[in-house]
Image (cartoon, rainbow over all chains, first blue to last red; front, top):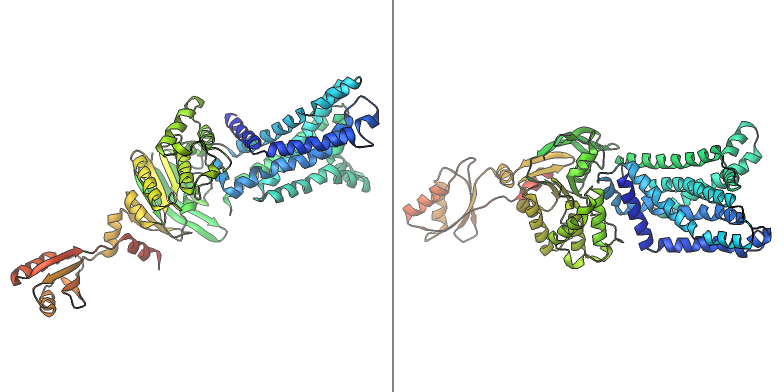
Amino acid sequence: MKNIWILTKKELTTFFDSFTAYILMLIFLGFSGFFTWLYGNGDVFFTNQASIRPFFGICYWTLFFFIPAITMRMFAEEKKTGTLEFLLSKPITNRELVLGKFLACILLVAITLLFSLPYYFAVSWLGPVDHGSVICGYIGLMLLASAYTGIGLFCSSVTNNQIVAFLLALVIGIFFHLLFGLLANSVSGIIAQLFYSLDVFRHFDSVSRGVLDTKDIIYFISVTLLGLFGCEYILAKRNVND
Amino acid sequence: MDIRVENLCKNYGLQKAVDNVSFSVKNGEILGFLGPNGAGKTTTMKIITCFMAPSSGEVSIGDYSIYRNPKEIKRHIGYLPEHNPLYHEMPVIEYLGFAAALQGVPPSNIASRVREMVRLTGLDKEKHKIIGELSKGYRQRVGLAQALIHDPEILILDEPTTGLDPNQIVEIRELIRHIGAQKTVLLSTHILPEVEQTCDRIIIINDGRIVANGSPEELRRQSSGKEVSRVTIEDASQQAIFEALQAIHSIGLIEPIRDQNKFIIESKLGESSRRAIFDMCKKNDWVLTEMSPIEKDLEDVFRNVTIQ
């Protein structure tokens, strides 16, 4: 547990020391803010309700790109520069390393989302807001973030090239994000059901509407764990050519 | 703590990187691991430090095994990997603090340990810089400081002096000697004078196999076998000296050097002819102005055992 925190702290320090964090946060908040407040049909004023649901809908897409950008360097860079050997010859387990990096990514997303709280305050100043649904919306975003962080870390662990890691995370991510949903509509029967249950949007939508179903939570946690176990497995396999 | 390596094998696909290697390093010993590039030195070290799993064989450190107690082993080892990987964007102090925390140094001791390592490795002037700004020599010191941060009983250094200038090499060597007095050290290199000056014992490895094992003196003796000396005798013609030398039965081979009265003399195996040469000079009233032993240096030993 202590080791995980040491690793997380180091990752976060690196993030904030190297400006990557600031640039990524700026882009994320810029895009999300623009589409939430300014961009024609679909923004907060257009819906004519005191609700920030448009923001969650937009984050659904911005997080999709934001998270692979955070996770891509996590293992790929360590492998490229050889620092992975430095880390893994220290008395820490593969799992602690994976969890340390995961926690760092999640915390960075959480910090970024904290900066979107003024949206919430602004809307609640404009009219009565359903506080419960806002809380659920944020929970939904964090669950989404954790699933994509799992996928992103896995992609980062299979290559030593950050760009490859980024693109691979998007390729795998787009299946969950969009394609499973589309495929579910074009087939029928049990396969359709399968695709339907794999579709992220359905789970995210129900959480962000304020319905906290254990099925959805289990779904997000499963995707996260799958990614993290995959990552751990790849690290444990390192004794093959590298 | 001592290191014991038994029948270690490591295959990369069909290629045998390490082939049935066994050796041990005793407490307080500095062992030099010598071999051409690609001989299996780095692989062996990676296995000992639990970064890589072997295909077969066992490595134990004290009572710990790499299979059952990797965490304990890692805690007792200080490791400087090949190419010295560092986080270039981190400041020196922060990096050393991170390494210390990972090695389980209690938080209250980290600052003092870091300070001590900075002093020991001579990083005082550079300690606030970012690692990426340091010169190669200083980076190497940071790597060494990182390996020593938790005061490990065993030190494993993979080519600690590559890329350094001669002054830095001497400094790093001295540092290793100094530290090695109380610790078990395994260091790899392909620079021969390095092992002669720093190591108590040498293992030469080639194509994944151990081809020689012993102290520098032992290895030299093993490979030369015969006594070879260079002799200069004055006050006589070369011809006369040559004939007199031929009369000495312990001499196997005489090789005159051009027209001077200089000879390279090789004795027969297991015999010494130096005394006889001196007696001969005394008897004939010649002056012996030079008699120096020619020792095969490690370079020859190395070439003999690695080129076949």
